Length: 514
Image (cartoon, rainbow, N blue to C red):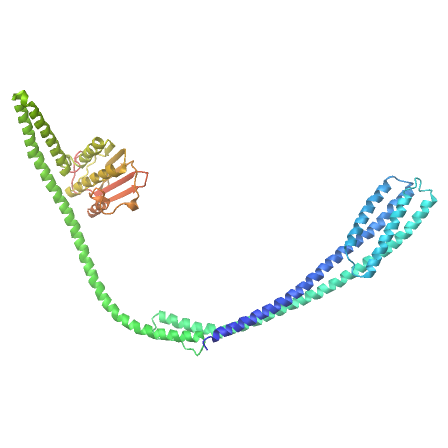
């Protein structure tokens, strides 16, 4: 049957909950009876305590009148009597609140209240005599009060014994109820032990052993034994699960054979892809090398053009300026204005040619080295052009660099300074160049607005130059690195590091070897 195991489990849990319900009903009934007897016993104990107090009060209330009569009218005794009377009446009120279980007890308590009333009345009459010691009437009253007191003491003792007997009865009943409760608990525990043992045996045979067999077969299958199968005759859900497992194992065996064939094909494909990846890596390396060579060639071309502009066009313009000024001196006053305009245009042209020469390739970079070129860049681009305070420091140690690295560093520094001008809103920029071991390190720090590194565009800067990503990529290619430390509102710091040229020793002041 498909739901055979579920039906069995339902029957087992039904029996368990039925037993639990029956046990709970019996247990709570016995507990309720136990609590009732306990409450009644507590009331009887309180009643016995009040009866004992009443006994003491009856004996105590006789003393003031006796002392008053013996001492001949002591003024303190009426006050003592009134205090004892108040306490006795309070005890009587508490006893009135309790209901005695038997009429005999109620009758005895009624007699005691009457005796107390007589004792109180007789005592008050005795206190009215100023000289009670020699007064015969007072003596007669005292004898009468003693007789009433004796009867009261006897009946109070009888009431005490009656209440004590009730307490003994309740204690016996409580003992019987406790024994019944223990029997119920013991029976419940024994039944549950037997029930649990039976359930364990059933679950071991019907659930645990089949699942253990299934688990063992699954482990064997997981370890590569594709012939592992579950042997079971169980027709419950576990049996169906074992059947499904065997079918799955058959499919796994078939698919494993197919996968083995596919793996061989994949291995061949992976090997081919690795060969292609190696070619791509080689191509990328060649592209980086070509890009570096292209950049160096571009810089050489820029330098050649800048040299031509400086050596030829600038000189021709300067010579033209001199000749025009010479002609101006010999010209008429009427033509002076035209000569002045021509001189002004030539002056602007000469300045534009110088600016273009500097933008194409810094002559200072090749004549005086990287440090001087960077310092000049700070003066021209930041301090003079934009009014930004600049600070430049150099450790003056020799720092021999290859031409391509020197050009790369200069272009990188210029690009970073342009970014600072455009975006940082900085008031001060500090550039430090120093030699650390076999490396050259350039640190650029600004007090601008900073930026979030995660939001920086990776490919190019906003102005279309190298961009931070390209600067880092090109430095990585030559064995260098660029570190960036920036947070919004805290300025920025860029650290450029490149290896120095080996096998070259230069004197201080010409660190680039140019």
